[in-house]
Length: 78
View 1 (spheres, rainbow, N blue to C red):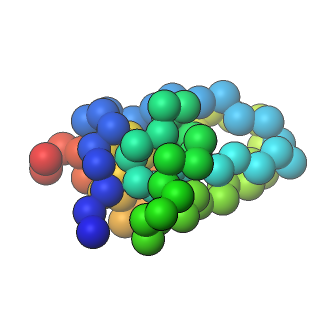
View 2 (view 1 turned 90 degrees about the vertical axis):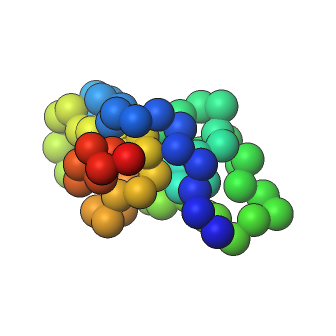
């Protein structure tokens, strides 16, 4: 089963050191890029991302990244 493409660009998010974030892997969440439970009943599960520092990270929006929750540029080949 392939994930739904939520958007074809990454989500820029300011994260806080020590905080956990749960990235939506199915692409159906209404709270993109984070999980809202829309995956229930499917084979998808959210991916935990733990921020090591206060920074801006780029969460994958196309849901095709080979780099887990973070963008690897896969959206450029869609």
